[in-house]
Image (tube, rainbow, N blue to C red; front, side, top):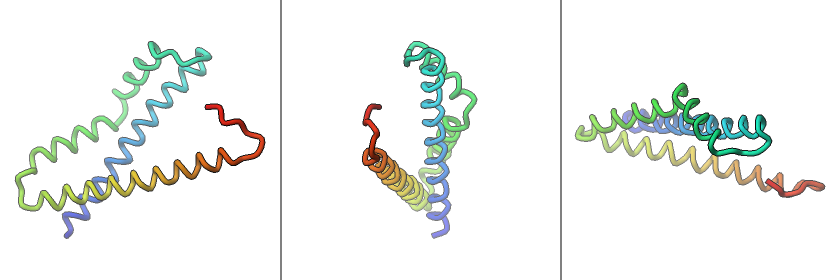
Length: 116
């Protein structure tokens, strides 16, 4: 049972690492839009890749995948993997619900246009 809880914590940590990494990618796009006045993919993609090299997100995901590869044959591994999937899944559902609630509230504001 404790292994499932450890897996749940690892799943939550993996989700936060991936979410922060995605945030860095969107921030790179915003930086290019601020500097250029429009989104230029020829500048946004290299900037996002360069910023990703110094971010913990890809390294955290690679480390968790490497650990999962080496422990896959242990007797307690299914409990750990189940906890990881549960933690990642719960965080994904909750983040999706919050994002859709935010977008709904922004769409219902009077005097606002829905241009993105």
